[in-house]
Length: 71
Image (cartoon, rainbow, N blue to C red; front, side, top):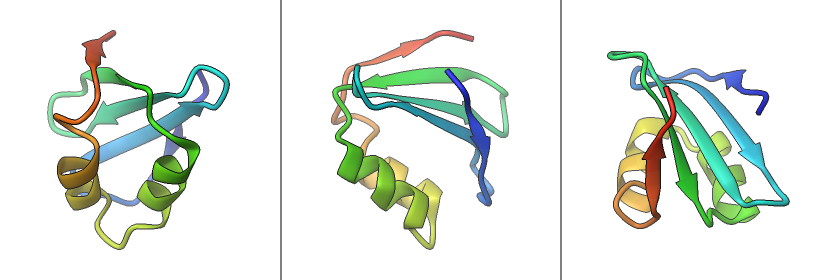
């Protein structure tokens, strides 16, 4: 999945597979890559537009979607 760099102190890159509804996140601090399942396109767009992407991620995605570490 292609990921894109974002302006965030917590998140380094984000990618989204619209067909499978998978959000892929690379974290700045540890460099780990995680996938979050069944994330809507609307949530992905709101994450990209959020003033604080880290805050949006923590309050709206993490813990609310199944997740798996892939890297």
